[in-house]
Length: 438
Image 1 (spheres, rainbow, N blue to C red):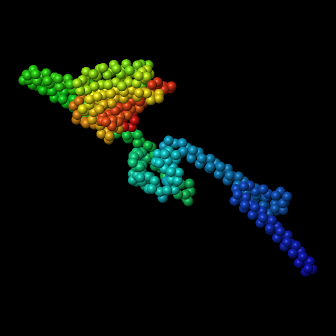
Image 2: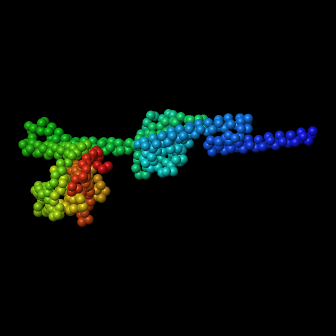
Image 3: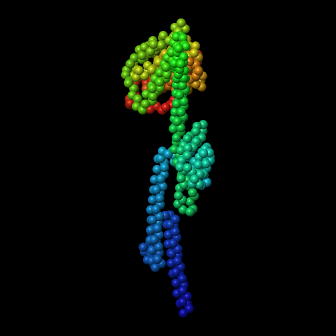
């Protein structure tokens, strides 16, 4: 009997040991399925496992894995949508954690701030050179930042001006780190335009003040003391008034011309005309202003270049202003040369003098309005300071370029490079109210 019981006990022990191994194998397979994020395929022939409830466990496991996969895909879809949205925003977006580490920067932010592909994970102090932004960042993290703030950021030798807003991102769980989102709107162009506008208003006010003051002074004298003034003095005063009225008239005409050139929809009245005839007609009008005993005006024109398709009235204005500039400001000149040549599909119109030239530091500025190399002498000569600015705008309107350079032998050369024929597509230009940005 004892032997029989021993055999039965050994058989039962072997049976349960084998079942235990199978259960362990099944559980291990389930764990592997969970780790691999895949469904567990239960062996339908192992009906014995139903007695242990393993089939129900596998079904629940597969349902949980399927639900997790659906949630993961949905979350990934949301993240991709957010990522795509931020990447396509024109505004710069930065996300920073509570340790001042950059978590995310969209493409607009990378381009605006000049950030590299490895910028994430770096401290903001090492990325941006802006004490104002770092102070705003601290306030935003504390929740006490203003709705927006104008901040200057140094980037190399240049400065960027941005309007920045900041907001805390709600924490998804207790373990996540606090994040702050910043949106930067670039206003550098607006700041430059504002600066140019202020400078322009100041320049116009200054240019108007002198002739108006002179006119008012002589007019008051004529009104109050006309009984005591000799006739010769009255005539001299009237001549002074007339001279300053002419100066005001020229200034206002040039300002109106610039205003029209800077209009939003400027249409050129292009027509085929003779460049040679246009130049000869204008230069003849300037001959009476020369001291023919000491000064000459020479036309060095390309014989094979004549017919061009341009707005003849505006190109005439270009030549008139460049010649007038040479006659007024080329101190000590004896020769002015008007030269034409061909450069591919463009023609070059050059006005060169053999005068004193100008300092190299002023070359890049002479096409800016009201810019004068010798301010005192320029006003004595009656210039408005707008002639070369008009030249630049007219040439740009034709799709060309203008440049100035000193001649090695002495003097100044202004070169206008203008298309011989208009471009195939109609082009309109919108000029900003500034010259240094062109």
